[in-house]
Amino acid sequence: MAARQTARITREVRPLLSLDNHEARLRVLGLYRAWFRQIPYMVRQYSLIVDEDMARAKLRQKFMEHAHVQDIRVIDMLVVKGQQDLKEVAENWAMPTHIISKFFKVTVDDRPKDFMSKFLSGQD
Image (cartoon, rainbow, N blue to C red; front, side, top):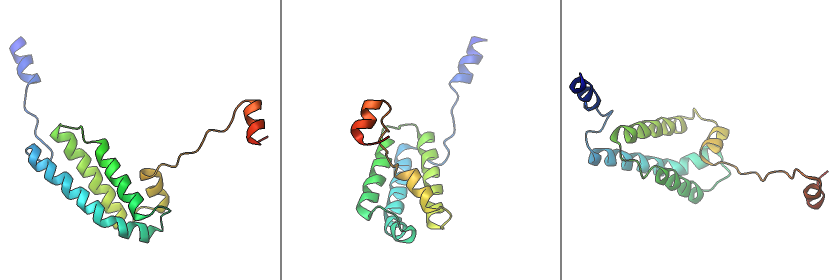
C-alpha cells in the first residue's frame, strides 16, 4: 500500500512545451525579443503616455520578476501567457487603458485621513 502511494507521488509530469531548461530558456528569450520588437509599434499605435525607453525598462522588470522560476511547466505557462498578451497588443485587441493598467501601474498617493493632515495639505 505504501509503495503504491510513493509511486503515485513520484510520477513524472509531462512538460507543456519545453523538454528541458535550455529549450525553456530559448522560448523565454524569443518572447523577450518579440516584445522588444513590438514596443515601438505599441507606443505609437496606442499613443501611450510612456516613451519607448520606459516601456523597455518595464519589459525588463516584468521578465526579471520571474527570473527565480525553475520549474519548466511554470516557465512554459508564463511564456504562453506572455504570447497571448503580445498577440492582443499586436492585433489591436487590447485598449490603451488595458495596457496601462496591466503593465504600467499608476501609483496614487493616499489621501490624508485625519483633520490635521487634510488641513496641512490644503484639502477639506
